[in-house]
Length: 424
Image (cartoon, one colour):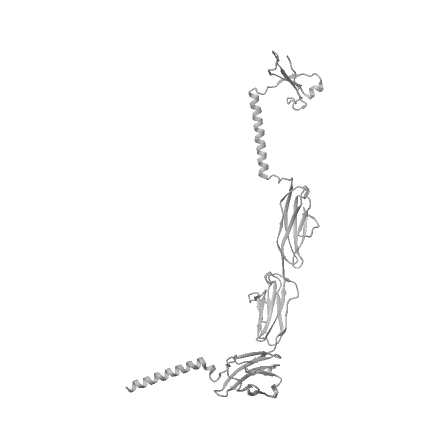
């Protein structure tokens, strides 16, 4: 029985201790401190700071108050008319309604613990405290960067920051985004300088460095330009152009800064130094090879591109396939015509020529070859009714061939046939 009683007492004592520790953990910061202030108050040298209790409530003005800086008294007395010690007469301002204390013309030695004690007419004494930490305002922040020309993949860039005041934080930004370290971007141990090696075109932009502390901040800016190119040079313009029209060729290059341009035509300098080549009125002599060369004077690099232009008769011209098709069509047509001639000749649709040799006795005539007397006779009947008479017309053509080539005496040449004669 006694054993059970001892066990019950032990359990009750343990529970009481547990709840006591829990209350201390949760509310310990308020035990003996009924007035609440921010745990830390920040101020700037030469500025001012206000200490205001956050949970004063309604206590009236007929109370005794005391403001202390550590063990040093600042003011004391009734809230409606406290007495300020001589050392703080020109440096403090007191609000009797909120019991706030404003401290002016802050000095570094003002850093420390400030305590407010309130003694009401009736009731318990109230107390609150806060710690003041002072900082020098940040001023004259500036960035120093490379002065030489930066070339992509060749140069390195070092940016160094400087400034005055109490600096508790340094932040770097590029184009309004945080600048992060990488294998190329390395920050110093105090974060006040950054090194970029080698530079790339993506490093072009605005860099910002911000110095800050709890009471002030200041930002400096610096712009880096990374030079590169030219590269990706191309010419935009037609490969074929009609005769007698205006034409443009445009040269494009990826370069920083912008590249300068020069043009050659069929190997000769044109004197054109802009990115656009203009022909006011095309001519056949404008056909040929055009070369555009882009040059970057900072990187000392150049790149060229070739463009071939053909001037053609208006209407768009014919493609190679069309020309081949026409040639084949002409060949087929010629073959067809030859076939028809052979066919008509074999079927006596076209009369056969009658060759008669004429001998010549003279030597000159013998050198010229033999003359051939060719005559054709063809009779056609036409009905021409004039009264009761029918007239028959006969068309007789004579063609005389004479070989003028001594090497080919059997090849005739043609002369014009005589006009038609009518006979009754």
